[in-house]
Length: 204
Image (cartoon, rainbow, N blue to C red; front, side, top):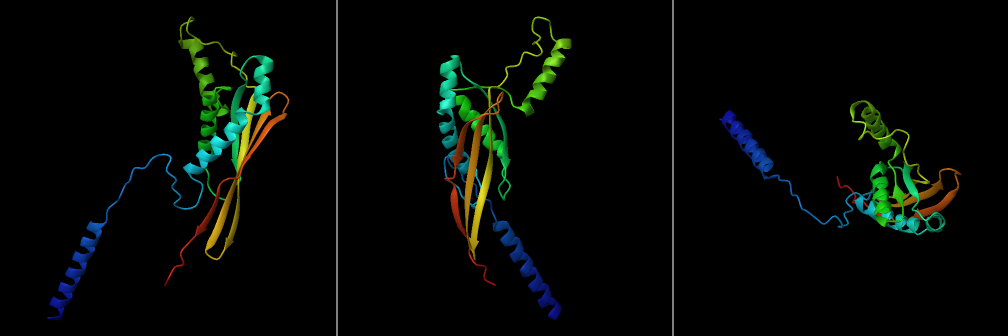
């Protein structure tokens, strides 16, 4: 009799587990790319957009850009260099640099050349064209457009914490540098991103 009751109890428990497992579902909601979604309190796509739009607007309107266009009757050629992650969290700065490239090109105030990571593949293609492409279509070697300015920068964080509440402030710095002279032509800073995160206390 005891075995029957025990077996019945085990069967009921297994049935409940199966039912509970079957009830679990994944909910997916599509939202606008402009929607602010702060789930963890860490760096996210909204922060990238805010910082890039702010800094690039300042950069393309800097006197260095305006003076170059006036003095040379041509747009300066810009390349985006390295943006360092000096924060305390993992940040894919390549997303930030691509956002900068897009905003700079779309501003219509600068010309752009391929980055150092992209040039290797392009140079290999030109080398192969010297052998395999027709003489009329093969692209010349040593005919690249040299950049006038390089944009570099960094992301830093300041964290303050007490009990279950913490604040995170992000500083993003950008510098436009004359490649020939190493002169810094423009410095930009954005510290608009500040978040206060409160975590609920775990009850045992």
